[in-house]
Image 1 (cartoon, rainbow, N blue to C red):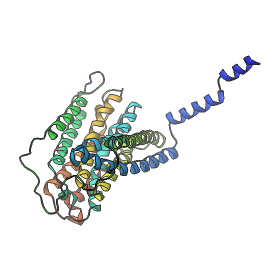
Image 2 (image 1 turned 90 degrees about the vertical axis):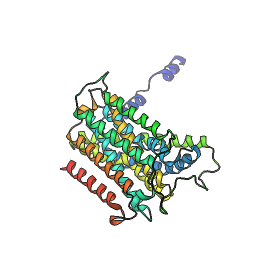
Image 3 (image 1 turned 90 degrees about the horizontal axis):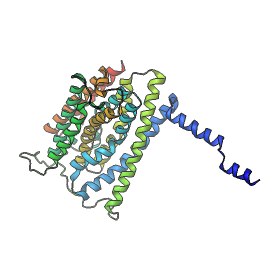
Image 4 (image 1 turned 120 degrees about the horizontal axis):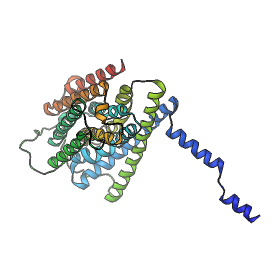
Length: 367
């Protein structure tokens, strides 16, 4: 009897093992179209809620660290809002879908740049680009142009890898780190944007949020909310792969538009929420900084992809989307330099052009 009890206690449970195995197969295998669509919706909703919370935390941490909205928004905030995109790119590349991985990275840049237009529409008064123009945002925009150019050169130039990684991935990382050092060097610029009555200066808030909480506690919550965004990114990547396999949809459309839009949700919500809080510099910095990190997603995807160079695997649709993201970045920089107070339909010339260019990209990929 005792031996029998021990046997019962120590013996395997076929039902439990089978249940766990089935759950694992469902998660790791191809999802149905219905589950894939549901994953897109749920992950998108979770991302929106997390981005709203990140805005309040980020605005406070920018003041407490002394980094300022532009640098903090482009680095820490950009990293937090880009985590879902990093996971999407890495998972898609590791699963052998390089075009989805590449398309998500550059498609997110195009969609996120459009977030500036939405934030501008919410901002009352002058155009957002006039109120939030800063030398740091302009430098990050210049960095973004250079990184997109490097990605195009890697895809169109001679191909070759070292230990399975294209040299351009290392160059992208070096460019980004070098730019951070330049921008955070503290050297006084020889020129700066002209201050007008409509310029919103980046100064610490007189009545900051969370006055009773310690900085360490805010960092912990910031990291926790970012972790939720990571899980959402994984779900979107798996859903996108299943949609391509189940429906036969163009990988360029799914990666560049569907995944790109979800990838852009954190920056979009962040920009709008930051504008409502009066942190206009943070709004622009989060978008441009997040875009720079999205280009670094290509390096992440290149490391994760074991079929060769991610840049070589990019097709015509991905290169077209990269070129479109480059054009949209140039338009945004022009808007920050011209600094129209009021323009076409309250959005300025750059806002109308950004909408037009993105619409052309989507239509071209859909046909």
